Image (cartoon, rainbow, N blue to C red; front, side, top):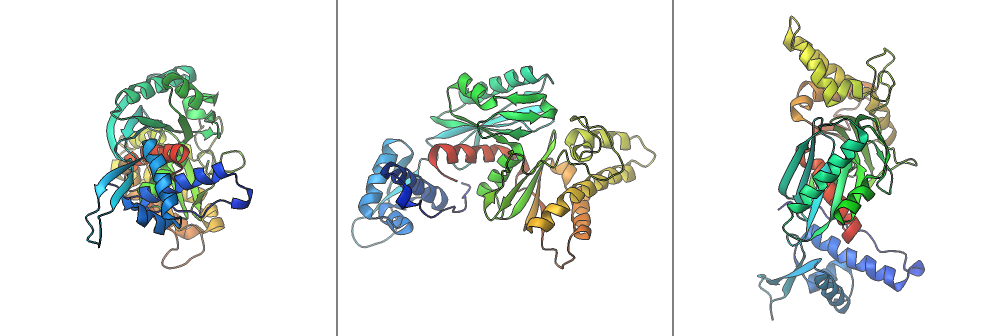
Length: 383
């Protein structure tokens, strides 16, 4: 079982809260505590949260009635008196569907439990570049994934390239041909399940932070069909006024021109770093007189361009780490070393470097797990 780190926050402002608000908060606080710490007795929950045993017992009774929590039986801990009954979040009796739309040629979906463990997967090839046809393909994939669930579903989470607003509308995703696509509402209407849509890099950040080893202050760069990033400062993800914080893929890097991007501009970071761009450049390098040197140059240049775009952000907010999430075969080795070297050259010189650069723990699962976090937060208040 993947053990998520504790994310327990202080209570709401009781002076301005209705009793129903306070109870809703306390219910989610019990679930957050159990999700982070594992099975506990009601007495241990009372001590951990700071609520009376009577209140905890009442809250647990409601959560069990909702099937959000379960009793596991008596504790094996040796203590005086009658063994206490352990309670836990319903980790394996509830499931979540997640969709990852970031890969170059394939759309991915999975059924997960509440620990982010992937229980079943289904993929479909991208057969159309058309925005409307692609929307229909994604909706069909969601239906297929729902059919694989073996327990009641809490909801569906989607990690999509592009700028996504709080209502699940993809405002723009140039690489998918989407403009103002109400993706969340479309999938919810097709499946009857609550659906959350976030930017793919934001989803990956949630996955790395909750189920991986991500720090409270980090930048995660998601490299796939396009390039995006998400920023965590003090344990809080930056969203931005226009829901576009971290959209570095369409930042012009350098003043030396470059290829024309899908967005119509020239020299965007994606033209050097996105998977299709890297694969095209590496295929051309393979035909050169010195394929190894040419491939090294392609990856080194991509790493340099990424570091150029990241250096001002790193300097401005002083993050602990930069996490790269994407195909390890492309990102590991020459490319990530180039990011480290170039970043060190462009920020305040300290030794050891104050910002580490690493690959995500399990990059092929990070977006999917992040979509599970989105649903957990929305439906159970667990974050």
